[in-house]
Length: 349
Image (tube, rainbow, N blue to C red; front, side):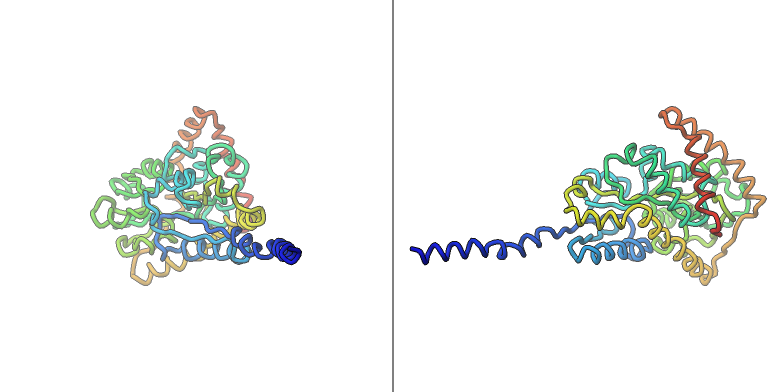
C-alpha cells in the first residue's frame, strides 16, 4: 500500500514535466495572411515574405504567418478588409481605396498633388496620419498592423501623353476615388477596377492604360501591353495610393503576450518603412526592364505639370466639402498632410 502511494506521489510530481512540452506547443500560433497579387509580385516577395520571416525568427518559430496570394481564400479584392474584420482571414493586405468613401480620412494622401515622389516619405506620412486620426475612427473594426502609401504613380498607356489634351478620351484605370477624380479633371475617361483586372481589361480594349506605380507593372505584365510610360516630375506628385495590413481584432487579442510583443515590434512606422523600400528600390529596376523592351519612358514638363495642378485643384476643394458634411475637418487634414510631406521629405530627392 505504501509502495503504491509512493508511486502515485512520484507520478503526480512528474506530471508537470510531462505536460510542459504540450503546454509550449499550445503557444505556437499560425496566422493566415490574404492578399490580391500573385506570389511573383514585388510586394509579396520583397515585403510580405521577409516581414513574416522576421516575425517567425524573432518569435523563435512560435508565430508563423502563412501567406495566401491571388485571393486564394476566396472573394474579391474589395472584400479583403471585411475578411479581416469577420475572421475569414487573420491578416489582409489591401487598399482602403478599393471601398470608396468607407475610409474618408486616409483619402487625404491620395488627393492630386499632395503626396511625395518617394514611398519612404509617403509611408511615414500615412502612418503618422493614421496613428493620430484614424485608429479609433474608420479603422476601429480591425487591428491595423501598419498603414503606408506608395511612391508617385505613372500613366502607362497605349499612346503617348505630353499634355492634358492628349488625355482626352483616353480610358485609364484608376486605383482610388481621388485618383479617378483627378483623371476626370484632366480630361481622361477614368475607369475604376482592382489592379488584378487590368491585364484582361487592357487586352479587351476596355481601358487604354492604367495609373499605377512602377513596382506593380511586371506582376500584371503592363510593360507588355502599354508602350508608353509617362511620369510627373518632382514632388508633390499626381497621385499615391494608401495600403493597410489589417488584422482580425479577436485574433490579435488572443495572442499570448510575448507573441503580441513580437508582432507589435514589427508594426507601425517600422513596418511602413520596410514596405516602402519595395517601391523605392524595385521601381527603378522595373523601369529599366521597360526601357530594355524599347518602350517610351518620359515625363511631362514642369510647365505642363503646373497646368495639371491647377486643373485638379477643384478635386481637393470638393473633397474638403464632402468631409465637412461628415463632420471631418478636411482642410486641416490637407494642411497637416502637406506639412508632414515637407517635414519627412527634407533631404529626400
